[in-house]
Length: 206
Image (tube, rainbow, N blue to C red):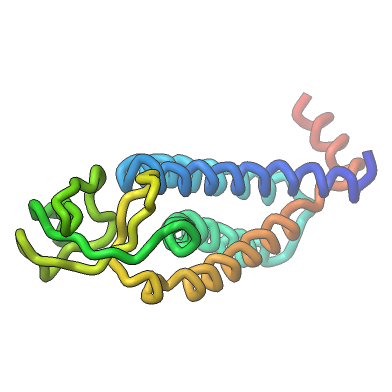
């Protein structure tokens, strides 16, 4: 196989793994909530980091290869953390509608010194909203009315509104920039070892 073909194959495998991991994490966030998304995203990030490590360990020698590798790892974290939130906001911008909801129940959780505020909602007419609010409920108490963005078909959890306040554009720009950095890191690491070097290393191992 030619050097170019091998580089495309190697880079395509790593890029494909990164895309699949992000897609599963975003789907988990949309359909199953934060906990499922976090588990999937952590697993996906570990997989991408290991794939990048393999890519740079087996590539043609490169001076200062630690710099593009480190940037690629950082970009992978940004894509998987900010990307799932951006995917949710984009989805709600496309399919959601502005509405008002009444806070039904509130509670807080604590993690590593930080406090998160959660709540369940029902419509102003009394109809229940099956899933809890996906964004923070800080500042609202039981019986308060708040603006939300709802999926009319009930597929996604509601988010705090109005829809015009969802930062989908800014989040998309951040994720796109991180994605380009990750792709550049993969491209740099995709150049394979020279065939003669690979053969000599195999002989030395045997």
